Image (tube, rainbow, N blue to C red; front, side):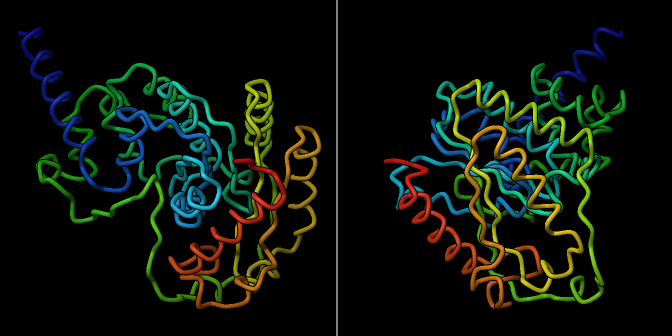
Length: 301
C-alpha cells in the first residue's frame, strides 16, 4: 500500500511540476529557460527586480552584437541571485564571457531573502541539483519537499496551473520585461531616510562568487542602474555604498559604471517608483549602457 501511495505521489509531482514549469507566469519562465533551453548567452545580467525590469537584452544585443540573458529575480537579494546563476552555470554548456551585476544600496548586499515567491522553486524540486542549491538558501518543510498536493495548494491552487497561461501571465524577452506603469511615489514620500549596511554573510558570499568568476575567466561588470534622485539623496551613508563596492572592484579588477546621477534619475516620467524604471526608462538606460560598454571597450564585439 505504501509503495502504491508513493508511486501516486511521485506521478502527481512529476505531472503538476511539468505543468508549472511551462506555465507563462514570469516566476517560472526564467528557470524553465535555464533548465530546458540552450541559451548560449555570452553576457549575463544579475540582480533583483531592478535587473529584470531595467536591462533590455534586445538593446544590448543590438548594439554590442552579443547574446545576452537577464537572470534578474524579483524581490531577491544576492543569496538567491547566486543560486540562479549556479543553476544557469550547471545547465549551460557555454560559459558567459561577461556578467553585469546590478549593484545598489539595498538589493545586493544588505539582506538575505527567504520566503518571498518561494513557489517559483517548487516545480524544480524533483531535480537533485536544483533542490540542493535551493535548500542552501531557502528553508523548506518536509511537506513542501515531498508532498506536491500540499506544496502547490498552499500557494496557488492545484488546478489553476492546468491552464495554458495563468492570470499573471507576463511575456518575458530573455528574462527581461519592461513595465508600462505610471509613477507612484507613496513609499518614497513616506521614507525619511535609509541606511546601507552590508550583511556579513552576504558580503562573504559575494566575495566568494567574484573570486570564482575570476578563476573562470569571466569579466564581471558592476553597474549602478538608475535610482530616482530623491531617493539617492535619502541614503544617509551613500559614500559607504560606493566604498564597499569599490573595495570589491579593486580586488577583482571589476569596472564600475554609475548611472545614479544621470538625467534619467531626475525625472519621474522614467520611473514607476523610486527604484524601478518604466519600459521607456529602461530602454533609454539600456541604450546608454550598451554604448558606454562599447565605447569604453569593456565589452568587445
